[in-house]
Image (cartoon, rainbow, N blue to C red; front, side, top):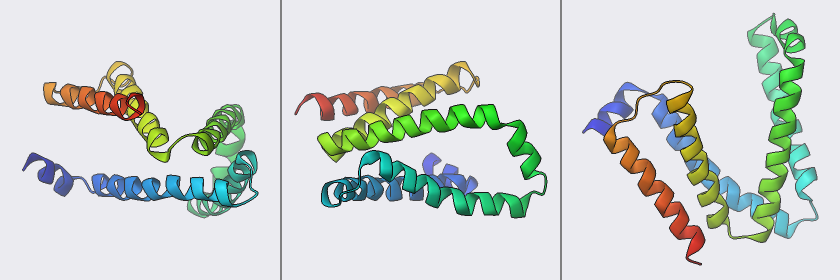
Length: 150
């Protein structure tokens, strides 16, 4: 009942369920693409960024006329974020090329979830219930079981 109440009160939870479903298929499709086409991980990342940037940039320009000013004042931060994101994306695709999709996703989501919870707790002062802490531990244990018991 508490879970359904949370979903009922916050539609963003439904968005994230949709995102998780799409990302699950995306990882499998990305591995298939890397194995069945001559595309390299670096080229794949570059093309994804091009196709993601064009609609995002256009929508931002349409939504906020001050977008150009914001963009130019944020260039150093954007360059650092782009460099980090590009590096991690390339490494993600290289990992997909060499290990099972289930391992890549387990590591990505398990460690990502753990680090997100820690950042949320220490930096944003988000409160975790006892049940939430137990759930995090179960997820980390599950991720380790997937990866280490091969």
